[in-house]
Image 1 (spheres, rainbow, N blue to C red):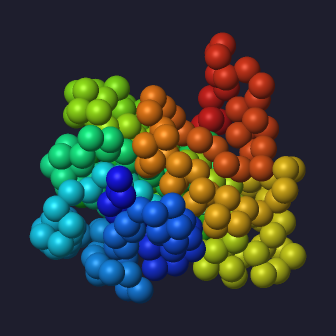
Image 2 (cartoon, helix red, strand yellow; image 1 turned 180 degrees about the vertical axis):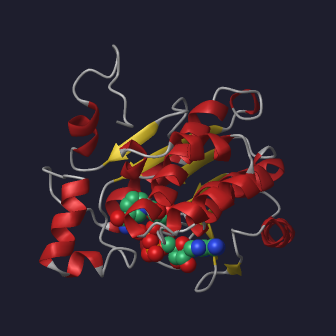
Image 3 (tube, rainbow, N blue to C red; image 1 turned 135 degrees about the vertical axis):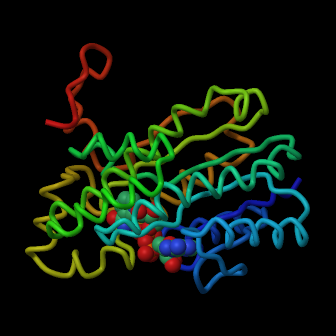
Length: 267
Ligand SMILES: NC(=O)c1ccc[n+]([C@@H]2O[C@H](COP(=O)([O-])OP(=O)(O)OC[C@H]3O[C@@H](n4cnc5c(N)ncnc54)[C@H](O)[C@@H]3O)[C@@H](O)[C@H]2O)c1
């Protein structure tokens, strides 16, 4: 039977490709974005999310999967608002609809950035849902320039990946039959990275921070294919996983032994 799959960030890049692949599988893609999608929504705003859930519910009735993929990399607190709070709020707002499905699945686009050094205080503020404090803290980082401001992005991605592992085995998800996983892409050629990847210097910066010895920059479909699998009925038992699709960055960064005394990511 055809499945209804919500895709956020469907107007561009990875999300646009994921929506296309959902349709190619014979399922229904329900695109959400600021623009260029079936439903317009600002995922940094809880009221806007509540409104779009009403609209989707009225039109489609059930939702079988959510691909929470929309994101920004502005090195400002907007990254916290969209990449962490926006993703958590979207998934939670769709839970009542997901619970009506036989085979509900959630997939989130985190990032290889979740493996980079970050500010664990900021990550904790996010996970503790201390929204105003987190935004203020993020602003103070932004004011110190783009390099330190980037912590807004890395912390948003570390927090969302941590949240996935935290909630996956709980009653809210596992006991309700809802699988939830994330992908952690390395450098992907999308509008988000066009400028960065357009110069030799930018490419050196990108692959210096996230080396990808296996096949270099990813194409949007390299990530979208995995997202679409994760929300399909084929994924019956996988939950709480962060799947790094990164040309080898995770094995370089965390090393071969992730089971004993893992290396701290933050020194
Ligand atoms: N491109 C990369 O190298 C890369 C690497 C790792 C992770 N990611 C993640 O992949 C995801 C998709 O990024 P992309 O590379 O396709 O970039 P993109 O800029 O092409 O697409 C992002 C989409 O999210 C939407 N969006 C942003 N803020 C929004 C908001 N407040 N409300 C609704 N929609 C909003 C944008 O309008 C855009 O259509 C993001 O979460 C990003 O952090 C990207």
